[in-house]
Image 1 (tube, protein in one colour):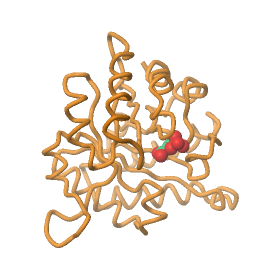
Image 2: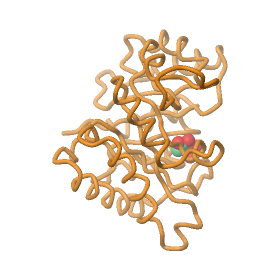
Image 3: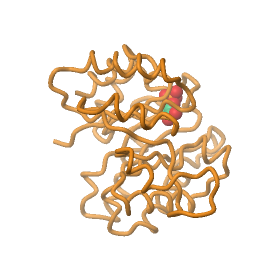
Image 4: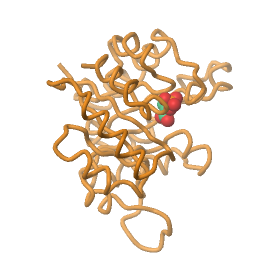
Length: 248
Ligand code: PEP
């Protein structure tokens, strides 16, 4: 059976002291035999610190972005090869906050996924509709368009990505998609991946959007929900650990 993945997205939170306390508490509370994959996607300045804190613990390191470019005059960007030097295993690409505040298009996101894959980093491709799009009945159209761009650019490598379905209206709002709403979209995405590759069953499709200690079990029980991308709840060790246990 496919292992679930529970990935924390710390967003722009943390400090050297807070990170150490958080990671140490998560490590101390991990189940003795971990049957799901666990990762934390941390702000870039803390990659080296968290790489050291996570070494040998079973927790993988993730970045919150990666450049589509290999090197050169791209001030502020970080390349996949740089991330690789810090042991980064996952890179979020196309998080809705990047799409919204940094104007990232489907094409940019697809190219970021490509740069990650070319360097042995698993892109966690975030897609999801806004509230207005859902209310206009456009959910399927939007998420399929976002995923299609990544499929188109990445060809046969597509089976190496992780997808995170994150309805924008559920991120950081405390409003969660119901397990049925989430499963319905995940099934659409699975079908789209199946049309693109015969290895679609091995692609993890995570749910993200106010997943927490109370709702994780029910969401993770859905047949096409292969894990979670966790924002706020990943900053509280007991809550993150409850979600990990729900996936294990
Ligand atoms: C996220 O940032 O990807 C996220 C899902 O945030 P939250 O869990 O806080 O909604």
